[in-house]
Length: 82
Image (cartoon, rainbow, N blue to C red):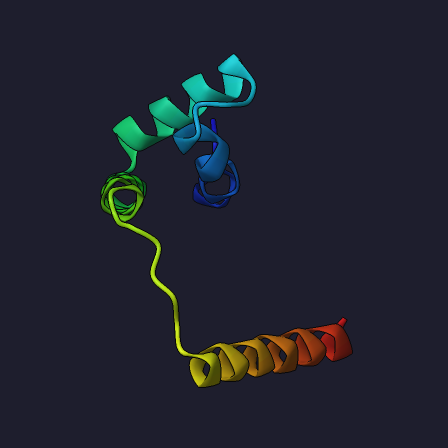
């Protein structure tokens, strides 16, 4: 039986329809039994469906720069904790 944490770790491969068939079956079983994880699954699946239908958009250079700085800051903070 998968835990909710296990489910979250396997969700990406499940949605991509890759990975071990036994793990996929266990994820399906978990989704059927856990309403909270079903909501996560359903919401994520719908979000991906919408996202895949969109055309890529350019973001302004200043927004890109701020985003990269925020990511680098977050990664550096995480590296210090480890």
